[in-house]
Length: 263
Image 1 (spheres, rainbow, N blue to C red):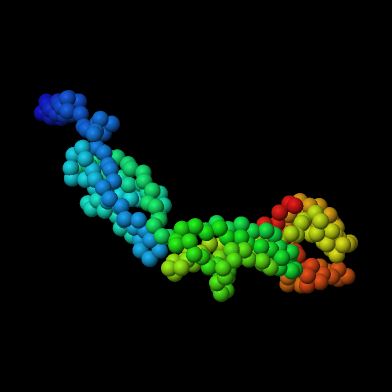
Image 2: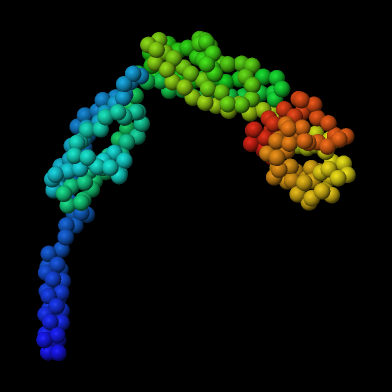
């Protein structure tokens, strides 16, 4: 028993000694580290090539590791294959201390474009898309949805829905962007009167087939918008004697595709 107690005392003494030694030799305080990071060189991306950035670390304790995503680290201080935009580069030294550098890689010869659109009639294509392009060599041609290029930066007679616009400069550099053209269809002015006229008779969405299926109530129509579109397109709605023309079915689809807005 005495031997067992002696062993326990020796273990306790060892633990106390270790703790005392650790308190006398605390670890590195990264808050006091002089580790820093700076840019040594950059290569701007162009229309036909990606960019790169090189950084230089100093202070702290070498060797250094570098990361551009905050997750994966590498020994090389250069990052290649970069597009234009904001960058966050991190360095970590041998003590685990870190420093972060924020930078922006500008485009040299690349194109950027901004799109604005006006609404289109649901049945007839009356919308417009205007393109504002910058960068490149300043000589632009404009194309929409894969069409032949044109010199005018405004497209007319545009239908509702998604459209892709491509801008190409004189060197062949191009850039594309998408925009949605919404319709002029209104819930209050178009959809509710239509559904009330064709669907709100006895046994069919006048409130007696379910409290949440009363098409005289705006809230019910909004909550069932996708189902209304699906059923009117399949022909299962409205029930006889209600009837919708092809244009009226298209109007419902336009309103739902626009986001079933409370408009």
